[in-house]
Length: 399
Ligand SMILES: *Cc1c(COP(=O)(O)O)cnc(C)c1O
Image (tube, helix red, strand yellow):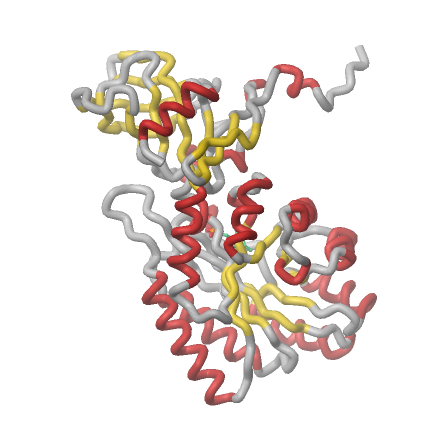
């Protein structure tokens, strides 16, 4: 998929539009899976991008799926994942949502003492579960996306291990999996090794363990000079530690990971149009026909997305602040060098596949954008742009 393909898509389907290139997903999946042995399983963290076509595509690659809500579980089933290829990892849901997942036959990961106790009392050893441990390893690029630190709401603190064991013993609940997910954008692969060592210690306390799930945190480069997590080196290091542990202890388990953005970030681009060029005393703004309601990452996580001008790619480079059309501070990029932007130019935001459309909203009563999948050389519309009626769809007029 090149820039000409993108321009054609912008012309045919209008802007703003998200475009996903399946070839890139496959490339990432192969890179990751070939860095480990064939027994290691990868659970695509669906929340990054849940369009049913993407889920189906990921399914055909042989990946499994990690779901954080019962609706993601249902989408996973609809996409063709069998229940044994689905892991349900919710946070702060009530027991009924867990029970719904149970009825669907998927793996269930419990992340707090209260539910563990309720579940154990009710079901004993009749349905094996995972436990999500918070190892209190600080990892990840941004406090908002780091989940392993001491103040995090995720998982059961490793310091509560005695309590967990007491519940497991008294209720007889069968723990087959241990899980941790310490955050996103981990640069230092030794964090995974640190996590693994904690898991190895925990295995002693849980005799029925079949699965060790190390979550995600694989970093992708957003700006020039940034690195992608070196999955080759990670695979080597992790497998070495795992195989050595297995040899020494005679224990066996499957190793799982849950990549989200690693699989789908770079596959996605977001095409927008420059509405207005606005020179102020301080800077030159490019006002585009979208806002943080469509791509919230820059405002929410201070994330960086490369921006290029597709319709004036040879223009003289100038410095711009790129802003959206939402009535609130809505900046996509500060002081960015871009080929001269004229009103009407089509700009592309790179690395927009993960947590892009997925986190979009109707703020300011604006319509959600379209999604297009570029697959085997052809563009397919996979979600139509919303229309005005969609804004009123669930509203009930009583006056
Ligand atoms: C969000 C999430 C992931 C994926 O994180 P990425 O940074 O997108 O790879 C994996 N596991 C769990 C439990 C998550 O909540």
